Image (cartoon, rainbow, N blue to C red; front, side):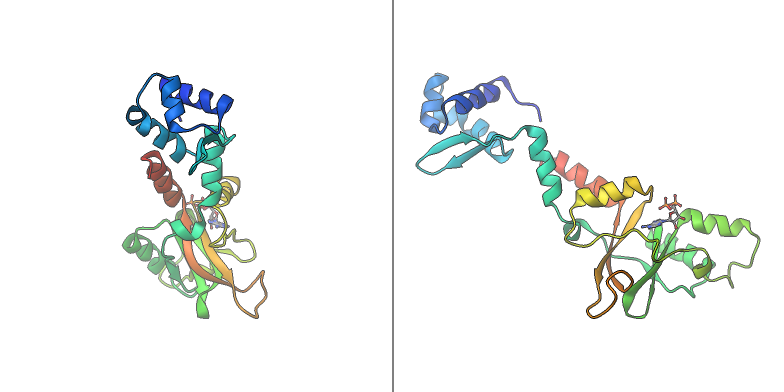
Length: 212
Ligand code: ADP
């Protein structure tokens, strides 16, 4: 985040003299309170300054980068996830390709009864199997998918930062969003409740860039 000269000056004054009222800051800069109002709002919204009624402004001690990092750790996967596009492992490779086109996704999530995670299929998994020359109308996706327990997942309460880190570390395009099934094995019985892809992260990035 780039600050204007005036915002830098305000920050310096508050760092040295805070807590300090808006009136006093305006006096130091020989400006009116009204002129300063937008700057005070920006600095407060960005988390650099904090305001307490009847006390005044004080410096939060956070750098702009730290404020961004905190925000990314605060936003939860559950807030940005998409609806999962799921198929059964008996679905044919042909039908999986058609589903990808119709649903406009690059990753299909394979579930068994009750929406329990079994695996994932990517575009390249499907391309690879079509090179084998087998009958893709008969071949089930179960033979090409990446199967549990090798599927990388996230929970709805995990941060989007953690999700993005997993996407990059494991070099995959999407993660099933899951929650443990009550009374089930918490490593094996995971109910699929969403999908988090690189697109969700990119969309969030754009929204944050727009100041939303
Ligand atoms: P693409 O194959 O279209 O480039 P990915 O990079 O997501 O898409 O997939 C690469 C490989 O990783 C594929 O074999 C796929 O089955 C597997 N894969 C995709 N998503 C996951 C995931 N969340 N956990 C584990 N493996 C995955």
